[in-house]
Amino acid sequence: MPKSPLKTKEKEKEKEAEEKQRLRIRVRAYDHKILDSSVKQIVDTALRYGSEIQGPVPLPTEIKKYTVNRSSFVHKNAREQFEMRVHRRLIDILNPTAKVIEAMTNLNLPAGVDIEIKM
Image 1 (cartoon, one colour):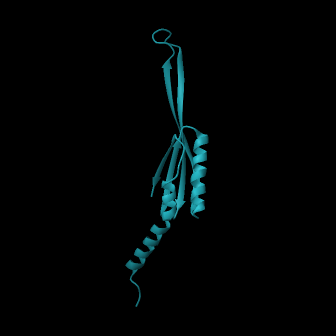
Image 2 (tube, one colour):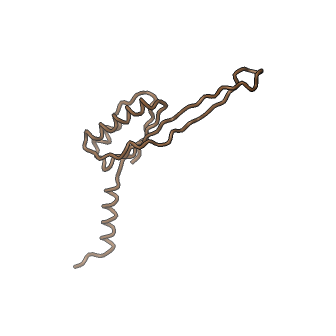
Image 3 (spheres, helix red, strand yellow):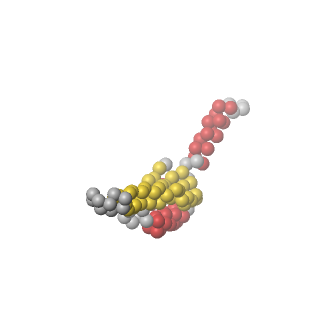
């Protein structure tokens, strides 16, 4: 008895969904050295549990510039410029297991590192 084409398409979609399951991690920090060390810690943890990794991919650095007057009310042309740089990285963990997800939630990252994890 031949299989109906609808059931085979459904099974193919399920297989694709299983294959495309990934854990997307976005990491942000002001200091790029701390950021790189945190990313290395994340990658080492994922590799320890036997996961496949894509990245870390450096995303564009977000630069916020602020211009302020040097003095309070005289010398209006004398100004100072300050900037804040936000460095970002993206890591994809393909086909994560429960142990990998648990290890990622229990990571102890340094202060100033913001991590966002999506399934």
